[in-house]
Amino acid sequence: MSAVKVEFDPKNMPFRRLGPSGLRVPVLSLGGWLTLGGTVIGDPVKDIIKVAFDNGINMFDTAEAYAKGKSEEEMGRVIKELGLRRTDLIITTKLFWGLRGGPNDGGLSRKHIIEGTKECLERLGLDYVDVIFAHRPDASVPMEEVVRAFNWVIQKGWAFYWATSEWSAFEIEEAQHVATKLGLHAPIAEQCQHNMFHRERPEKEYRPLYKKYELGTTVFSALASGLLTGKYNNGIPEGSRFDMHSSFFKGTVDSLQKEEGLAKINKVKELTALAENELGCTVTHLALAWVAKNPNTSTVILGASRPEQVLDNLKALDVIPKLTPEIMDKIEEILQTKTAPTPTFGRPALDSYGRL
Ligand SMILES: NC(=O)c1ccc[n+]([C@@H]2O[C@H](COP(=O)([O-])OP(=O)(O)OC[C@H]3O[C@@H](n4cnc5c(N)ncnc54)[C@H](OP(=O)(O)O)[C@@H]3O)[C@@H](O)[C@H]2O)c1
Image (cartoon, rainbow, N blue to C red; front, side):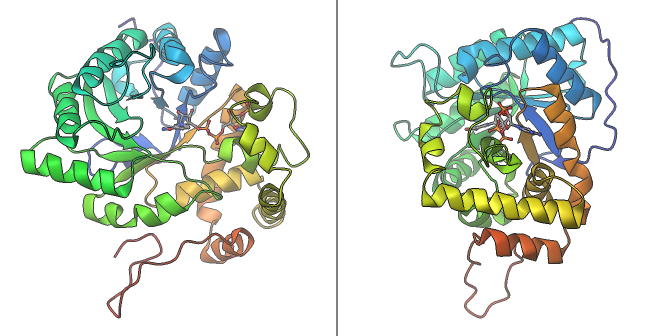
């Protein structure tokens, strides 16, 4: 590791435990999907990571598949060039899609988990990551093989913890049971999509898991890829994510012309009015703060194509305490997407976050 040039100052960033582990993660972290190593390369990657680190964000998320490995390479390069101390950082990466498309280059076989981890570390130029995620479930591999392989990766010191991403509650349960039965490391967190328009899985399906396993979440797409900033209210701005990745987001963009999409845009407009008139903030800040307020959220992984977006999104921290029960009710009135409570059959109810 090269010489340390910058000391970490958490500033006013709150930190939370990641699930049942002792790892403390910043409430806002930063990820590299589509951006770092993808649409953003070279010095601008450094500018984005530096502005985040200078403002208390010391957790960075990537994946083997992001920009076909380029995201990990760029992140590793920048960490070295900026002279960040490894112990100050929380680096997370994810395995599943692989890079070469061969029969053993992806998925969650023991072979890919072990070889894939080694390749991630090579691209990052690091000896270890803090958390390694199974980027998706793999129904073609026995769960015992998956749990044993991640346990091995941890035993080797290549990762401190393992976690899942977009697994069903059933699959997470199975991993927990196998790990407990065999006395092996269980996943500590789930990297799931959670935003004002995508609530069912994190708020309902996973509800029992937060209580039972203290499951943590590293939430992604809290801005619904930018939809919740209001930037798509009047079409697709040039250079925006939906423009730059038009084929990937074709379905989403098409839906914005239809009833479902137009209803979402209307909700963004109503949320904008609420944010500006009652909270003195933007809808972007409100959308991020709303996810961060949830006690089951360990960290909200931001995405940013420019340093200014990181700085702007940090303002969400000031909005979290302003989300009173009255404001939360007003948000629910606009969204109309509240998930149904767990039936109690006359027994004491859980709180709205699924806790006792
Ligand atoms: N595990 C998984 O399967 C999975 C899936 C997706 C993401 N993730 C992780 O989560 C991270 C975040 O996800 P995401 O990128 O989808 O998050 P997001 O917050 O929903 O979208 C981020 C994008 O919104 C736009 N944006 C952000 N802040 C803005 C602001 N203040 N004003 C205007 N536009 C703004 C930018 O796009 P433009 O400027 O380009 O328009 C930015 O790249 C990823 O980097 C990745 O690490 C994981």
